[in-house]
Each structure stands twice: as C-alpha cells, then as structure tokens.
Length: 146
Image 1 (cartoon, one colour):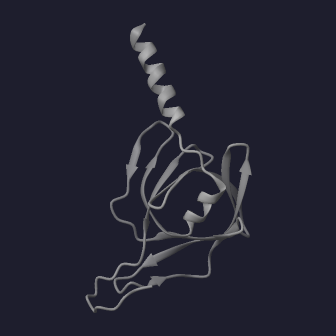
Image 2: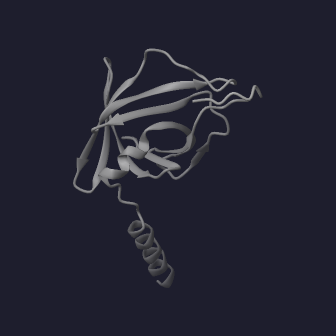
Image 3: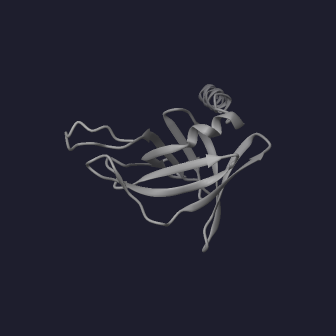
C-alpha cells in the first residue's frame, strides 16, 4: 500500500512539473532542430546518434513552414522545394502545430519548448525530442557560416 501511495505522489509531482507552453514561447521554435530521440508510446526510447537531416522551422504570427534540410560539411544546407505549412493553434492550456501539404493534414502537440529543447507529440503518442542546432563547418576554411 505504501509503495502505491509513493508511486501516486511521484506521478503527481511529474504531472505538476509539466512545462506549460506560453504563446510567447512559440517564437523559440524558429531555426534548426536536430532530433535526439523518440519516446514511443510504451515508454521505450529510440536514440538518434547522427542525423542526415534537420528540421527547419520559420513561424511568424502563428503561421509558417517546416522543411527538412541536409547540413553540408562547409556549413551550408542542401534544400529542396518541399515544405509543410504550419499553423499554431491554441486550445485551452495546450498548443498544437497543424501541418498541411498538398497530400495530407495532421496535428502535433507542442509539449515543451526552450532555447535548447523542443518536444513534440504526434497522434500516435510518440514524443519527438529535438535539440537546437545550426550549420556545421568542418572544412576548416575559417569562414563563418550563416
């Protein structure tokens, strides 16, 4: 009985510490994000050690885009014309990202956002954990990347 009570108290603690995403926080999503791990609905983690592509977000006034970009060794990115339209939607105490392409529409919940971390949950209850990133320059040519 005591262990059940401890588990319940610990669960309430974690639920109470859940970060509430404020409208002002949404601007932090702009930029390049590299996926670190996916937490599956059964609590299993799938770690990503190295990524060939990053997600790039550009949102202003609750509308924008997300696109996949591929970092190059010289600090540039390979991009194509494909992108997803993103609309930020607020519903009660939650923030949602509504995506649309010519072929599909879907929604993800914005669970947490900071200057360094982004957590998004999809309809399958998979949590995608990202870290903020930027251009990579391994060429050693001394040039700054933008």
